[in-house]
Amino acid sequence: MPRRLLASVGALLLGTALAAGTPTPVSAAGTPVPARAATGADTVGYVRLAHLSPDTPAVDVYLAAPDAAKPQVFPGVGYGVVSDYLSLPPGRYAVAMREAGAPATDPPVLTTEVAVASGEAYTVAGVGRHADLGLRVLNDDLSTPTDGRAKVRVVQASVRAPVLDVAAADGPLIANGVQFATTTEYQQVEPGSWRLRLTGAGGPSTDAEVQLTGGAVYSLLVLDAKQGGLTAELRRDAEGGTVVPAGGVDTGAGGTAGAGLGAYPLVAGGLAAAAAAAALLLWRRRRRTTW
Image (cartoon, rainbow, N blue to C red; front, side, top):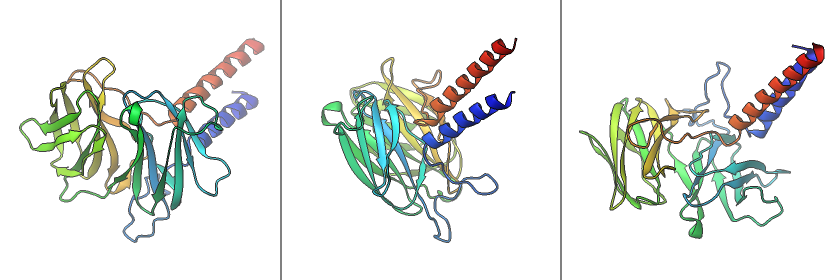
């Protein structure tokens, strides 16, 4: 590829990395840094952002440190989207939400503050119905479960099932009576393949097939599916005491057939795709000019 084209692609990809926010640190071997170091020498905490209000349109999310010249901005965050963890120096951070596309000078719809401590992890989520929307800071316990088990909690973001029970077929009860816009405590369970039955009191029900790995920590998101009913998304938050840097969905199902709604990083995926598309366009233009 011509040098000018390579330089353009490099600039696009660098812009993608910068716009996506501070990445989770990795060691020289390329593995994630432990969420809680045994020596207690952590120098960062972890924060991720989520939109969990079913009837609230997409929002722009702003994350700012008190001494920062400009906030990090995550545009167009829609319902059911959960970001990867951002590694941040300890301190207090302001989180604000504005309607998608609104000027940064407009008053925010919601604001809150999160105090980030070394080695700790947090999820800042917009929760509830649009009429009484609120920002909630969840403490994420990413410590390794004991005896090779897995650890899972339920994040209830479905208004169609305002009270929800989650139980494993031929297995233990994971959670019962979970109210809309609440999150349960973590529960340790045996690893393996599970068929989970999600039952709403007077509302819809669904099944979800999930695979739980020993030593891993999960959040099970329960959402209103676009096509009606419920869908469940299992997000692996940590494994072996380390933060998962790319928080993909392990299993999600609206019923047992097919995958559920995707959960993506707030910015990085879209920007990377845009960079690749722009690079391809530049290459095609160069080809036409050359030939």
